[in-house]
Length: 247
Length: 271
Image (cartoon, each protein chain N blue to C red):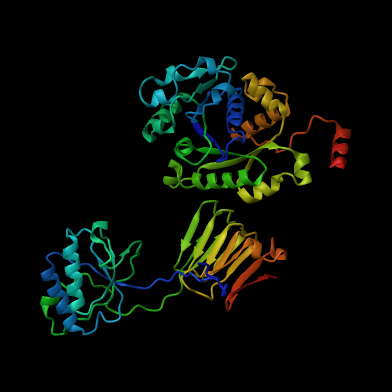
């Protein structure tokens, strides 16, 4: 059977990062679940609507124990979206999918203990920092002050990337924010990679192989030829990449 | 203080072995004790270009594996007594090179030589990374065409990341040696121009070696081009490059073709 594709719009593939709460169970699970119950009792709905990841790295358990633990958590309305650090023998269709490549973020603030100074809660809160809410921070950025060579890849999902030098053919810049190249851009530049449609790409000389903003791509062949070799900025207007010469 | 130079390129066939032999001979002619080391285990060529293929008894792999002592494997050049060759093994492969073994050989060579020139194999795998591992200076051999330039760029990135110096937070001194350059063809746009290559690679220029039949002739004679005919255009270019490596300031020139002035004008007009 042949399916005729009538709608030829490309499927849009994007990366997006979410902050998940990571639970690290400890053996024996009975004791750990009791401490979890205690934490939940102090703040109803602490786990509600939060993506939960179970970190089982270093735990000596088998698959039935893991399944049982996930069941116990489900009974407490804690739904596990993924398992980190699991051996492949622990995984299966009835276990949430394995997650890899996570990066540390600041710890979640656990609900505070009663102000009566109950020392019994000290153990639960041993790993909790940042008692006050985090202030709004400026978007981070990095500056690379040498040429990016062929085969090198600069990945910075946190924010802007500035290159003082050229980006060689076969090199790649991936930024969560905008990309600035004070030199010739010959390689690939992927801006707004974590779903930032306001990201832009700037370069003092455009010879790029591939340009992308927020998951929308443009190859060298799609570029207007008169932009080649020019100082150019690119941004997103709706679902189209717009390019214009600087100056 | 001994200096370790790696002659590297990423791409094959651009002139690494020719340049290793020519620069080695040129440095040795300055009365500085020089050894050229072939890292192309399994595909050795440096012994042929040096004209020492019939004198190889032990090789680099034998020394690394402890089957021979370093002085047993070193071959002294018949023309220059300051020039030595440490050949590669033809019957083994690059897996026989170990990081510790290479370091031991380099440390031992540093005690008795002024210049250690490592002829890297093509590629970016084990042989190439071990050849560049202990280098103080890298000579990046590039032809004026896009694929060679891109491979050189890749190698420069590795020199900044994978060498012992880079891991200590120091930098490997990098120099571009542009080989097989033909001014007329560059002018016609058949080849990249010197400025284009320099703009892409952004490392200092060590020299421009003209495309010449003398290079092939010297290889077949089994002599480094700087020894075979030291008055030829490529030999003069290599001799200048060696002087720059040794720290002298020599202005860069594109060595003139053999034709006279009339030929040059005629050549330009024909193009």
